[in-house]
Image (cartoon, rainbow, N blue to C red; front, side):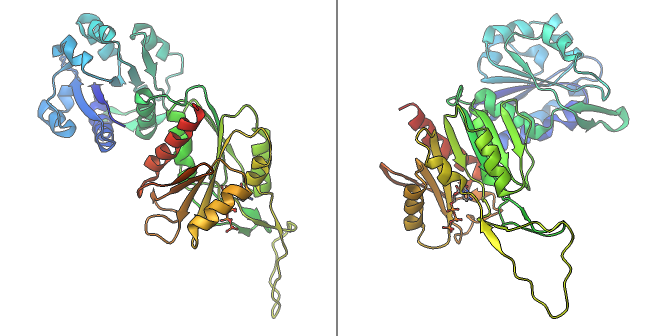
Length: 387
Ligand code: CTP
């Protein structure tokens, strides 16, 4: 995603929060400019010099008090990180607030609050902020050394809010169901059957769809990745294939698209043993496994299914298997990957996918970060939803 972001920084959080945020935004290819506060007292410039801001952001820095109207107009997003009573005071006394209103750009305000602050106090900020501003409240402790601690939105979550503010919002108003992760099939209180999936691809799809405006229900098995708190991303945690099946059926209404990226166990023990199974010398143990419901195939067999996307992780005959799966499970799209290729297997941060659909030639996507692959898959879905 591209865009120009102006970060207004203040106080000690300028030292402990803003630098990492700026680095992460630049890694995501955003252009960042910093406008520190410069009043007498614990302003941003008292903690971090102009030269340091310019070095971290790669862009000349000018104090907020010295910015002109054009500096606001040039931006795609204004980020008040953190917004504080002192920033509001600078706004009140100078022309910055008028320039910001006039520029008409989206504003994200990130309060750094005292640990015992209650949720009513942001109202105070809201009443003094430009109408287009959105508050990002968070509970993560922000350590300020000798100055104590505040609480703030985690950087990771804020990055998703930034992506959402600058996204093309092409999935706004669309409702999506996504499955992710492995399932775990319990055998006894200690043992279970599962697979190598970490859930990264499904979670990346859910975040990307939410960032682009969709209302997303993410039904996931045990994950090895954390989920951000986004207002339109609703996570439903399950354990077994049977529970995932039930959760999908429960949420199977008024959907525009569904992406089944979970690595659902194909087999489950025929019964659960409530006590730990003890080994007996000289005896082997034979497990009897039953087939689990094929959720994707069941959904594909319904006449009224929404745009339906499945995954095929293959080690041989990728194309043949993907096309077979597309037909057999009656999907609109299969995302296939060759798990033997470097950077494509389970637990990697990258993936290389080929898209198979009934009416188009296969489309091979390059090896990319899973977040970018997720956007490529969603581009394909979005194109079909407007048809
Ligand atoms: N899937 C599902 N429910 C299952 C099994 C799989 O919804 N019980 C979905 C997966 O989420 C994925 C696709 O089906 O979208 C994978 O197809 P599948 O035939 O299960 O793949 P493999 O297990 O790899 O197939 P095979 O047994 O042919 O190797």
